[in-house]
Length: 349
Image 1 (cartoon, rainbow, N blue to C red):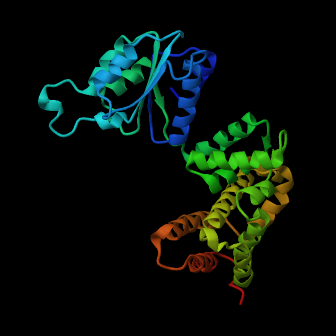
Image 2: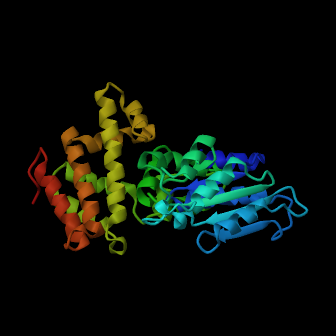
Image 3: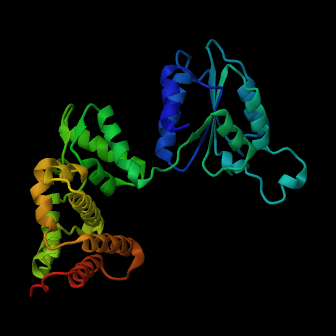
């Protein structure tokens, strides 16, 4: 099941006796555990019916004993076991003939205590392990895996809606570009933005510029436009205005990648026959930006835009330690390469 499915069960009070929470996204893990713990201990005396154990520090016998203990003056009991990956057998252990802790947990889950909610947490479990395959087939495996880049805007839009706010078209993708891929950073950006605009407000590009990055997309468009015109002087002047040495230009690369992808979608929609307003909507931009997008496309073709994205991906790697050049020199080198490799006018002096 997804983390959303598990949290929905918790909010409805329809808890299973066992949940195996596995994956490498700690933010989702925290959300799921918070909801399940709240639901499992609803109406119970705090500290009386909850037990928190760590695999390896507590034995499997201790865990199973805790899971089979009856609740005191409450409907149910909560047992949380972290670090299940510590019980992964080492080389030679599986052939010892002794039943392994994870297999004993798998046996328990076949007939669990109906008055206990057992939360099993492990990030590095072998997916072929009997406990994992059993959890998957029985429906109590909660996958807390990192979201793919394409799924981040949807996550952001849902998070904004849950906070009684709105987000302008295409801006969720910008927030994802600047804050992802770790969901804790994405959630922090959403919290700052929704507090900034207030309840019922709308998150815009300007709000992102104020709260997430000191960099206005309109200024970045000047840089994109200068590169499109093959105007080296204007491009370098624009770079001076938007480069922030504090983050080595990484946020700038994020905004440039977002702007270029918007242009790619706009250009593809126009080639498919859409009018400018429709093309802007397909690009994830409001209709009033259609003229601005069309202006940016002058002097650029599909090959240019694809080249931009490839170069920006390479630049991202360089800024994260892949090059010995100073960060701003890497940015300047990329601009020179983009201007020198495209069609159109010669670079301006």
